[in-house]
Structures are given as C-alpha cells and as structure tokens.
Amino acid sequence: MNLNRRQTLGLSAAAAVVVAAGLRVSPALATTEDADKRIMEFTGGKAPGTGKISLTAPEIAENGNTVPITVSVESAMAGDDLVQSVMILADGNPNPAVATFHFSELSGAASATTRMRLAKTQNVIAVALMKDGSAFMDKKQVKVTIGGCGG
Amino acid sequence: MAQSKPRVKVPKTAAAGEVVTLKTLISHEMESGQRKDKDGNLIPRKIINKFSCEFNGVKVFECDIDPSISANPYFEFSAKVNESGTFKLTWVDDDGTVTTDEQKIEVK
Image (cartoon, rainbow over the protein chains, first blue to last red):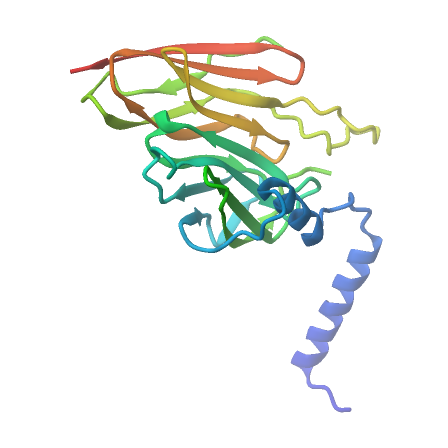
C-alpha cells in the first residue's frame, strides 16, 4: 500500500484521536438510549410525532458553556389546544436532562428561550406534551468547539 | 451565598389580552456537580432547580432546571395579560434559598 503525504498525515491524526480518547478519563456520558428512556417516561410511553414543535439552536457553538436555545410550539394555548410542558434533553451530556418548561393558559404562547451547557457535539432534543396527551419532538445537532461541563 | 438582585425585563404597559415577553436573568454559578477542584475532589452540586412566574397569584410559567443550564440562568418566555397586575418571579436554590422579584404591568 502506497501512502502519499496527505493520507499518512490523516492516518496519524486519526490514531492520535483514538489514543487520546482511550487515555482520557471522562465522566460517564449519557447515551441516546438514556435520552429515549426519559422521553418515554415524559410522554407516558408514547412515541412523539414530528411537527408543531420547533427547536432553534446554533449549528456550531464555539463555547459549550452557554448555548442559546429557543423552543416554540404551535398552539392556541386555550381549551384543549394547550401545551402542558416541554422537556429539553441533551443526549451527550453527563446528565441528559436540561430543563422542563411548564406552560399554562396565561402563557399566551408556548415558547421559551434559555442558555444551556453542552459537553460535546451532540443532539439537543425538545419534546412537547400537549393537554390531549399527544407528544411532539424536534431534534437539532449542535457542534461544540469547547465543551462546557468542566472536568 | 448572598444572592444578587435578579434582572427582569417586563413592559410597563400592555393592551388587554396582549401577549408580552418577559426576560429574566439571575447571577448564580450553577455548580453542576461534575467539576473537580484542584485536589481532584468533586465540587458538590449547587444550582437553582426551579424558576416560576405567577401573575396576580395565577401560574404563568414554570421551569424545572437541571445542571445543564448555564451559569447565570436566563429565561425568556411569554405571558398573556388580561388585566393590570403584578408578576411574581421566584427562583429556588438547591440550598433552599428563595429569591423573588415583583414587576407591575398596567393594562391600558
């Protein structure tokens, strides 16, 4: 196998990453399954549908310590068309739970903005639970340059 | 820890039935419980675990907070205002400290 300079560099970089990952004593990070389990608990065992809910997050977060996210759900916020709660999860953080917003008829609109920490590049998930029991989900991948959980 | 005064932005006036936006920020280190000090001991978790907003005693918005929320937690949310009154905002710390702030709004 003949390797040119570029391929050799690429290979050694990949090897370095593997070694570094092996050596790093990282805290137990949450897994996608863990996040899925929490979604099931939140919705009462129902798989959430898509649409209605939209999650806004930056594609690339330079600083994982403070990543602005906005979640909003289409709803009249009256009668049965009411968003009860919205749960935010980060499937790659040490603890996937981020926050749970609870809305009421007085909220007027089911939207909220906050700032969160991201330990590494991962998916941010928002799940909305409506008053009639239906659930909706949106997911965004955020690339993180510097992780925000210390360690 | 002595809590610093939270900063809250609420419009002074609104039309009846208008949906207004509230912005809140409070200074807090939000120690996640994941970090270690220089001797390698875990720094115990100390965060604000609950934020809520009431209008004239009725619940408007509530948030259960986990350690993944950034230091100096910021929340922006909306509220429907049908009458003049007072927003009461409450932050609850892990150690039981409760910080509150009140903001009046007038319906014209």
